[in-house]
Image (cartoon, rainbow, N blue to C red; front, top):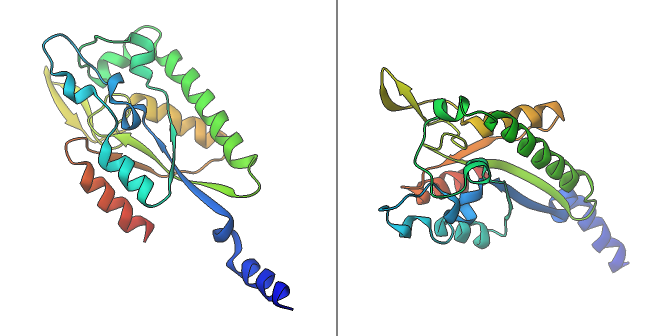
Length: 193
């Protein structure tokens, strides 16, 4: 009889007991070496992962699915910083982002649909604020001849969002500010309850 009660308790817990949570993260969260870099810029900002985010995920047993870096895979390093406008007008970059986004979404769909037990739940896509490609709500634009940060999605994440929608996948997008990664962790902790 105790086995039956145990099975009943597990069934009542439902999907939560059989669920694994993951975040889909911009490439540089786990590998800063792909961020823009050029001669004379300190290399320290391009080493390792964004440690507070990785420690946060590890402490809460949340997995990470790494997106490709569209800027690095298209231009490599060294490369100068650029605005969203510059990437939008860069020949071939849109096609490159579309290809990366389609492949990423196919992989995510496979990850979610092919796992029966434990079920994988994608909590959010995490972008990098102030990135022309991976910003969630803040990207650099040229406005009146000056570089300004405006409230819009980065080029690659915009394409990724459209590809997710085509396949019926609804995932929230959350931005991390690399100057204040602890703020992101606190915000995410509040969202997770």
